[in-house]
Image 1 (cartoon, one colour):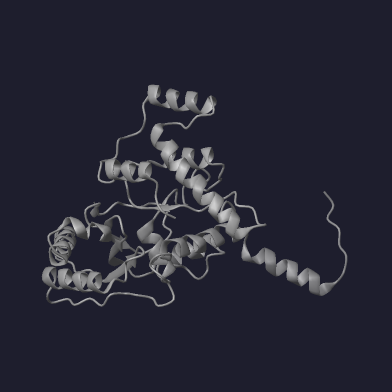
Image 2 (image 1 turned 60 degrees about the horizontal axis):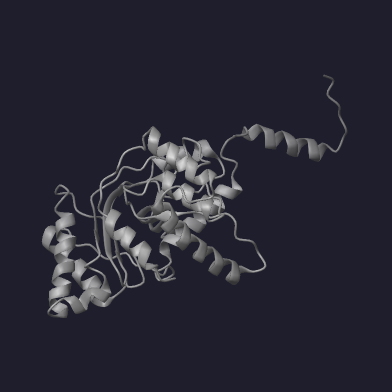
Length: 304
């Protein structure tokens, strides 16, 4: 779905802005008062909610007669958009989520890079129905330096993360670039296509140079233009220049379209979140005891 002009303006304003910090008492009171009067908590929340409502309507039409009332959210690592902003926007749009309903060992937000990481089958525990076993299995997973590169019509977004668990509770932000002059539709602003791709290449190289000499071990793609042939060549050139001794093959899963890769990863998370009661754990002996009792077939009573 195309973004609204207001949403584009919002992202251009906050895309590379630093984290504003937690709202003070006056800001919290204003948010509460606006919500009490049936208004968006802030103007930015209103912009987000408008887009979410349009997405909700489109999804409801496509999935009818099934209701659309709860969603799993993934977003770029934009520090200026806080969890409370997204939670308020979802509430105003009439959508529920797990953003405000997560335990401390569950992620409160999942960035696009992690969702795509999961969509490609990385960073996932096989024993996810058992919380403790999943934790232990996750600790033994390989830790990889991942470049996530997304190209859309309107923006170039790339980030670097050291990833192990796709759905870890704590997410440390890595270096990133969000460039609204790097979208594919921006080519007309440059003297030639070569100049445009040189700009994209410079942005990727600048990002890669923000880390130490450790080479990138995996490249994941996103965006509707993520598999553009020239974009892939530009990525390879940038990686080869920064780490000439460590060639990287672009990780493109043929079964996962970069346009929907983040959504695929979040759908996987939503399924796991619904299947597993993450606030409790039952000892394996309990199920074994139930099976033995069923096999015995006899009735028994426990006096209290």
